Image (tube, rainbow, N blue to C red; front, side):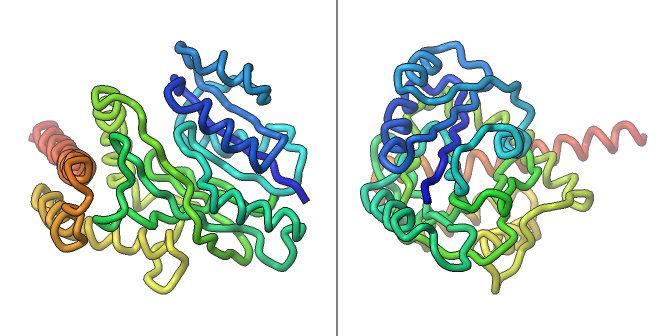
Amino acid sequence: MALSVVILTFNSEASIAATLASAARVSDDIHVVDSGSTDRTLDLVRAAGAHLVHHPFENYGSQRNWAIQTLPLAYGWQLHLDADERLSDGLVDAILALRQQGFAGDVVGYFLPRLTMFLGRELRRGGLYPNWHMRLFKTGHGRCEMRKYDQHFLCDGTTAQIHQPMLDDQRMSLTEWTARHNRWSDAEADEIEEASAATGLVQPDFNGNPVQRKRALRGGYYKAPLLLRAFLFFLYRYIIRLGFLDGKEGLIYCVLQTLWFRFLVDAKLYERRLARQERKS
């Protein structure tokens, strides 16, 4: 049994060619959902022969679920990738082995470990690898949770893990990287404030699957003091989890992702609280 591949794009010319070439190693049914690219992304997608569709972007959860519900996928299994993610040789071999076996057994979804590549370097320390994501599942058994940021796919049956990485090759400039994370900090702040009303999310569980365990740890993080927890998180990742062994690239990533981004989320939460207090007074 073969599988279909779904890729989301937006101004992804730096990485999409490599992502498409990687996807073509495991599938002849590749679909790209673009949300308004103005660079060379669309030309590269057409040149690769992938099926290209356009859909306005609301949030990642909505975009992924629209793709699941709408695209004319040719096969009964689907693999979902971001525009800067590609399959390692080991992951290609593992997926081809599953295909050859016809995805036999009762497993309906597979967690894949994502390995971040930042400024050209693989980041394997600091608790960054393995970063598990449900990305390969049988049609009818998977959907994406409706979160504005850090959304994961949910699978309603038996799951397993493939211990070969997909490479998250972040080739965007730091100017673009920080601009996107600034936008995502608003989405994360929204998620934190709206958590009590959220439905259909991955449930935190220290004894559950890798994503449930990560979500449980995230819950512990948000119980720590506002504005202080980002510094504690940085020390945990960079010192205790040996992030410093990833060199200058690891330092830059830990400062930006673990400290700057998380502190920015907290600062925006604090700003919102002040604004609410002013409105009440």
